[in-house]
Image 1: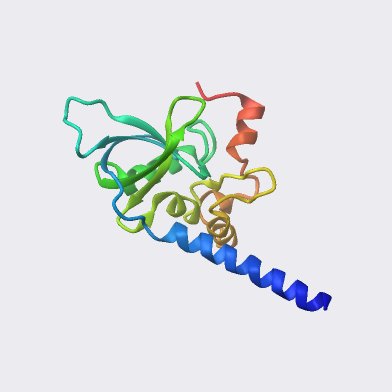
Image 2: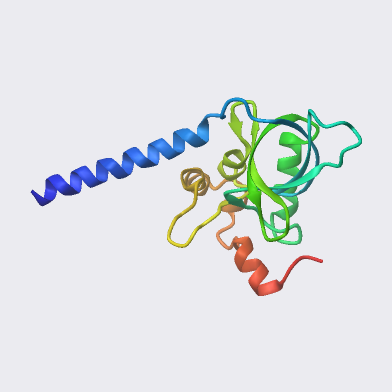
Length: 172
């Protein structure tokens, strides 16, 4: 009986993992469109909604679910460049979810059917943002990048940005 319960629990966990992974892999429909006007670092960019007039200022958006190295940290410039190469001056879709403590809009960016945050983690330019005991929304992409030693995961001494900020303070 215990083995049946354990097998059922394992199957449920796998199903939930696959369901969350598939929701990350597919772009939602009818999201607002915007053009990326600037990339500040590997997880922060500026966008101007396509429907806004040119006189409106771009908004600062923090990619939710990832944590990229700080600009002054190892792999920080590469993460910023990777994000810029991927989305700068391109039309994207936005899925926003409120603001963070620094008044940045929080959300996800889609380039066609591609979740840009998932792409950043899978290519080794950011960590899946860890929440307490959860490995975060992009844990599968991070595991893949680690196994393939992609980007920052090629360095066994890579320090997560949260720990880097705690040890060194903010970049100046």
